[in-house]
Length: 209
Picture 1: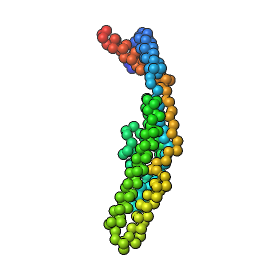
Picture 2: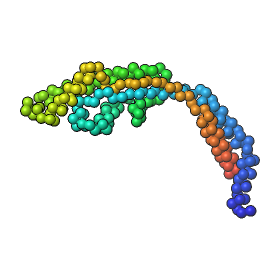
Picture 3: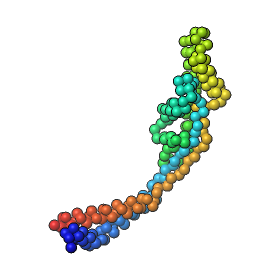
Picture 4: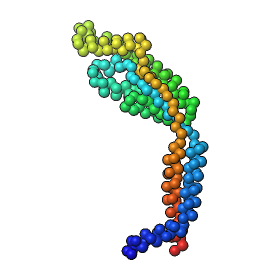
């Protein structure tokens, strides 16, 4: 028998002699995990599917047909207005987690208010942009292609908002209760219990020497 095999056999003998220590550690850990999973507050996942309904007037000229340019600006503007905790995936679904069931429902009202405020902000920006263009470009310049495109984009944005369009359009709002993952918690507690038991046995063995 090699020295390595002898050491491994000795380690297994030591662990087997302390099997009750490991059993107790595993039992304590799994009991704690079970109690935690039963009494832990459930989380609620808030999901809001949305589309960007208005292209800001200030973007239509510099971005032209570059959709990525437009979408990046719209997302940036949205997240500047949102509080921390929201995530936006590639499918334009806003999500966040909360442990407050009532707050989860209130998010819908908050987002609708936010949408209204952003729409009004875009309308104000468009009107200011229109005044600036009219004041900055003389009649001859306004007849150029660039000036006509810019003027049309601004008026189009104002018209869209006046016709009831908003910065965002919410397709669906949902709240999903996410219970603690009891099986995963118990598996982790089982592993931690075994490791804790082994550590206790090795410490005891070291102290006895």
